[in-house]
Amino acid sequence: MLSLLVSLAHAQEATKQSPPLIQTLMPMILMFAVFYFLLLRPQAKRAKAHADTLAALKRGDEVITAGGIYGRVEGLTDDFVTLEVSDGVKLKIVRKNIASKLKESTK
Image (cartoon, rainbow, N blue to C red):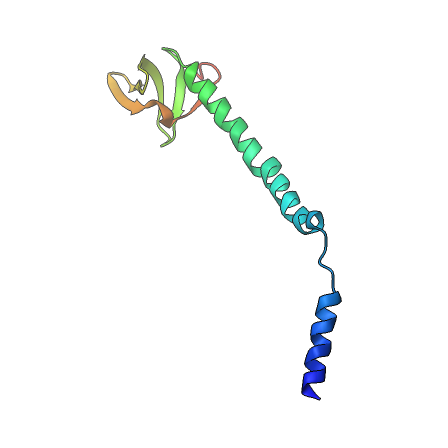
């Protein structure tokens, strides 16, 4: 009796068909597309805009660092920026730590 039930179970498994491959992969493809358009693409745009801002820095620009320090650009190299944060007070920081450039003089 038990062997009959086991053989019937195996027979039913053999007749089942698996879904097509495209139907199996479609949810994964859709999740990747949503992930790309909602997360990766906007982040790449922000990174490009930040890189363009850093490349366009010039002496006299007013900037804010990632740490919240406000200053005026006094000197530039490829990797470093010298900021004047107060009369006679200068800080040398890594160029990538410039968070934003102020539009125009805020005075």
